[in-house]
Amino acid sequence: MAEMKFYLAPMEGLTGFVFRNAYQKHFGDIDTYFTPFINNKKMNYKEIKDILPEHNKGMHVVPQILTNRAEDFLAIAKELGNYGYESVNLNLGCPSGTVVTKHRGAGFLAVPEELDHFLEEIFADCPLRISVKTRIGINDAGEWERILSIYEKYPMEELIIHPRVQKDFYNNTPDMDAFLYAVENSRHTLCYNGDICSVDDYKAWIQKMEGKDREHGSGSTAQHTEHMMLGRGILKNPGLVGELMGHAPITKDQFHAFHDDVLKGYLDVMSGERNTLFRMKELWFYFAKYFTEPEKYVKQIKKTQRVAEYRVIVDNLFREQEWKPE
Image (cartoon, rainbow, N blue to C red; front, side, top):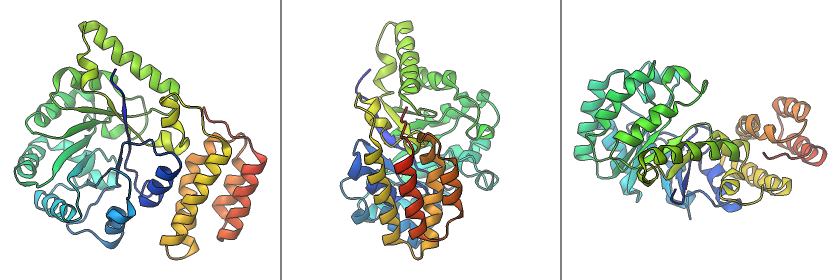
């Protein structure tokens, strides 16, 4: 396969500009960062802060939009263009119930005729290039053929496929047959997203893709699947992309320094310790998985209300527990 390009998935509340800047400083191996979704007709203060060019220096960033109203999508895209952005991503993958019931995110896949009309409108008038991040249906993979046939009508920059249906949320196994169906039937540049959390996961995915090439006796499969989006895997192990590229796992000291810069970034931009600690506690759901016995420390982290106390707990964790990147 050609050299892989790696993307950081947009994860609400987790991969905003503070996380992106710390990650870029310490690791710098992501080719494109996607912002957590914008879902207002006019961007609010928080969304503007996240996409400001001065908050994303040295990174290739693509803002993501979540809406089912073409006029809102076009208004946000125009505003993003004023900030210098040339590409935007449409979220058709969010499985959250509150989003789906409004026929947004993955919920839009339940009304394919309306989705088709929406895409026709935005591709006709959007001043920016458009990529799409999608699931393969609402209830079962049998919906995917029709959904993909709609996507094939439009000149999207890229199609990012998370091969689960909405009702899966993040359970069950990604449907590789559905992804391979797109490989064989789509004209678009494709990006794979879903459950790549270790080197072994990545190798297994590569083997499936190369096996498909051998079936066809060509490299056609690899030609437009050389992009991969990672989310939870990077939160669990920020050194994952480096390992996929053949580098040694990051050390505990590297991870500690990265953590400290994320903490400092939140303290610099958020009002009050409570908001900073809320963000850090969310991240520890993932961070803790790569320490030997983190349970008692995580319980203490969840209870703390002061940054000074939080620092002591975290320093104890780093000092007393082993770091075990897989």
